[in-house]
Length: 379
Image (tube, rainbow, N blue to C red):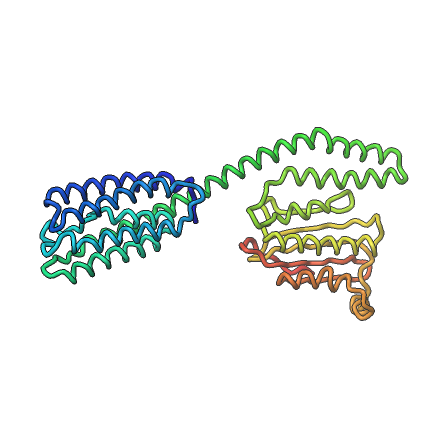
């Protein structure tokens, strides 16, 4: 993936390397009198100089397709290598064992490594090394050393690995900066909410209690929303793609519903957490429907061995024997779909325990990505 921010320093270093290698190749050519064909040799040096300048501007430029540029970079280097047998003539290999472009051909290998990582660097190194070795084998009397190929592979793999590590470090730093900015904004919003909305909700709750009647119900609802909002602004965000089940459960807390959760987060995939909380909400709806609007209920959440268990308990009249089966047969799918069906879709299980005049307990267990303290069967 193209990342101009992190590639910039690498590309500048490669440009410096190309310029230094170009100067080295020109010195070698001049030192050996242009080899067998000086005009062709200096023409190759000219092509290398033009491409060095073009690459220095093209790689950092925005909007330039990177893959075609990398392919052209490698083709130019290979073309310069192919010119070596003609330029050096029969004496190839006797003049230091280097081709006409000398170490300049490593430039594309480094560029491929920076852009595509270790594998791309190794592929480019293989192409350059194979071309160089093939040309040497076909030239009578030419030396066939393997040191250059080894060094090319090492350069491609090492630089590619370092570039990948640099990208990962930059990505982590960026995420940390974004999280810090989000947390600061969250704290600012929390202060504004505390100074305005929460105080208004608390005032409505107190006045509603004093006035009684319908105002008392309004006050009760305001109290529920105040508790849920306080929990929301005090909780820290879960990792991306995940949610803290505690935050979702605390929204059900009120004067009639007590929610108890561990001190540590109950982190689940976002969809699993939302579906689990919805199943708990359906169980609480059943409490209000069958036990009356003033019935009390308790919600307990705990982590288990690779599971999370949430229990909804009430002190209502209980569920008469066979009632759930009759409801399912009559087409009333509240418990079957809203609770059992929803949890089954998550790979979890629901256990309902009830006895006449002893209340009802609904135990919801869902798989969690990490383990914790063991869950337990309730009776």
